[in-house]
Length: 144
Image (tube, rainbow, N blue to C red; front, top):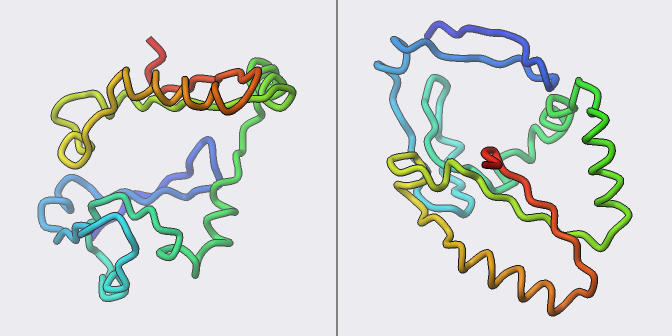
């Protein structure tokens, strides 16, 4: 398999990409469930992994590498510093809305149901009842 390598501009990652032709001949290994699967150790090189792979147990052996590669290389913007200060100086909660979760036909659409507006409203009400003077910070990949 030919792999294109290039440096990531935001993190310390050296990205490796398979070509489109490589993906046509690559075998896939699909994650069977959301919790740790010890059978992952049988996966060999050159396999396309499909799934979320969100258990930290998959990455314990390379945690230092991951921490190093995920160091941000760019300076935070003035607006970012301002928001960071607002968050740290308030009783804050964050709400993340990934727009891709609401696009029909996407990968997450095949596995998860998108959360309704009512779900977010109830969560905000519940948190607000438990915490006084709560300030919400909303983050999204598609703020509109």
